Length: 44
Image (tube, rainbow, N blue to C red; front, side):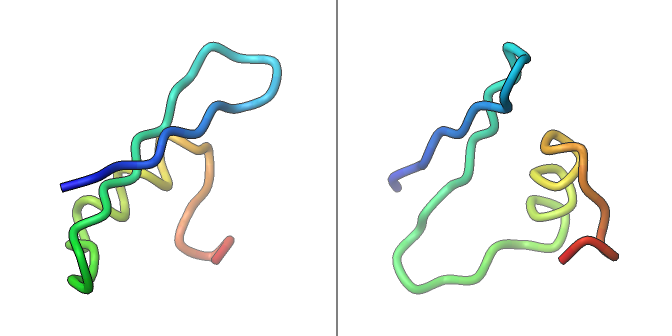
């Protein structure tokens, strides 16, 4: 499994996005990524 690392501007927050071939992200994983990014489901 690979992963992408993103950082938010002006913070030290690192957001990890797992990449697992052609499989979709699990809903809990997606919600965790959105929370770490300071977003909610309405933003996407």
